[in-house]
Image (cartoon, rainbow, N blue to C red; front, side, top):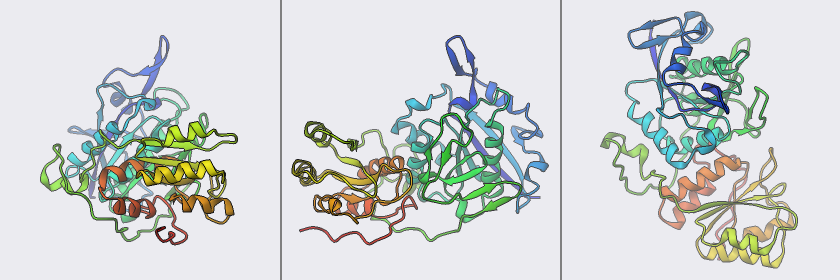
Length: 384
């Protein structure tokens, strides 16, 4: 029977917390890995420095693999509310440096910003042809009734048993027996085990009584020509994947969420000096047509600020079907269609860092680069 090897990277979050004097705190170094041995669903035996999944856990997978995995814990577990773009780059570098040793990857992460990380990694690892499964838990693995064990087990199955399935060789999120595309998820519940959803896209996999794979392999989406690659972290062979992706000095990206009674001073302060702005609009992409508002957008556009229109509504798409949206198009606002706010933000950061010309950036923002949005209509021609 063939073996597959999975790298598990524990970065922090509720999944590894234990009670402390002033609330939940990360477990002591090594305790998280040791805890996995106590769960027969996750640990059958050790083979050298590898943990081996029990054969019963993989029995209903289509390909019969022996799944072995290794766990690495960060020295200082990260509360996910403290995640920054520098962490996204660190996770990406960690995975790329280990790509020749492992067939799949599991990233254990706090839930609060998990959708941002999964979206960011989907762009940073756009051309990476191995499964990267991100998961976490609503209750710690050290607690009874924890969802951590099922989430870890499911992630190991996808990363190990489905590592040769092209449609799953991407960044995904596994939670509560559902596998979602990483740049299509959003957190919908703070207390239920079903914490994540993919409002505008079907789950890739449903782990029920049987494992149902809904994902279909698709052709790679062409994107604008990249800028030259300069990465001090990786050997030349890995350079194309991390081409110009250091996010430590990203252009300023902001979010402008519209609300009734929004003031001109506030809008102009957000737009002023930004590199890109995610404009969270009403319904199908609607916004006020006040003269001052549209002029503020036009002025920002003239100053080179990229404006991407996303809806505040959980499900649906930005569609220019109302008269009030006409002014946005004329002001140079680009349509984000059904992209999530998390994916829109990380895509804007990635786009401004990866591409150097206005034309390249505009094309990338209007294109579904790695399945993050459904482009339902052709973009409007450039306004002259």
